[in-house]
Amino acid sequence: MATATAKTVQIKIKRQDAPAGNPHWEEYELPWRAGMNVISSLMEIAATGQTKDGHETSAITYDANCLEEVCGSCAMVINGKVRMACSALIDKLDQPITVEPLKKFPVVRDLRVDRSVLFENLKRVKAWVPLDGTYDLGEGPRQSMTLQEELYPISRCISCCSCMEACPQFNDDTNFVGAATIAQVKLFNSHPTGESLKRERLDALMGDGGIHECGYAQNCVEVCPKEIQLTKAISEVSRDVMVQAVGDLFRK
Image (cartoon, rainbow, N blue to C red; front, top):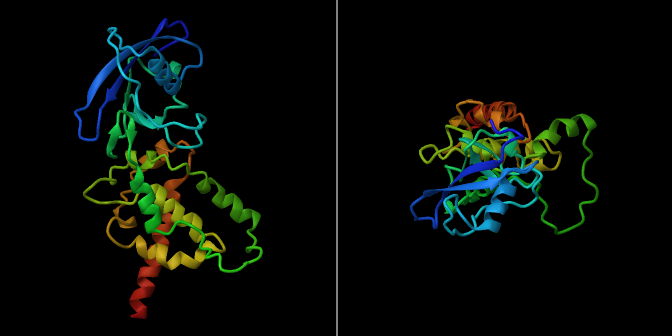
């Protein structure tokens, strides 16, 4: 484990020049500074422009924005585990530190991946409150403080895709929509206005890649940076899907 007495930081980064390019590793050595995280290390590598053996290299491509674990864009595989690079402190990581792009999403370049599948899944389940804008609806229905407190943790999802990366069921064979999408179904189905699309959302989870694909491995809960109780949301939505499916049988 790296300590405050370390003189240098050793980092190995998996790089790839293009979506169809061959991945390769580059090693870097940086001077240690207090409070370093993975993102600041990537910034320093860009400033120095050299690998550990002194070869010139291009700046590493990666996604980052808020740098305070709010935007969700800097999710990477660090020392074999998916986590946010902005909150991954160097002093708490074993060296040499390995940094890789998410493994279940198409690589765009280096550490940047295409996570559009999440947003396609959110569109699939209509994860929004419907407003057509044709006329003034006035004030919406009031939510009780109890309901607000219940739903607030789910609303903290930052779309980082960590839950999907860690999920053994999220793969090309299952097309599983993932825990984040299901949790948003719970959020909007519980909203006084959003529940108008409840039936359509639950129908969307009955088909290919739907909620039945979840194996309850609970990896999603372990890696969620916002500590959302994803398996609880999945369990509750699964119950709603089952109730609706049985009701549909009797209505035929």
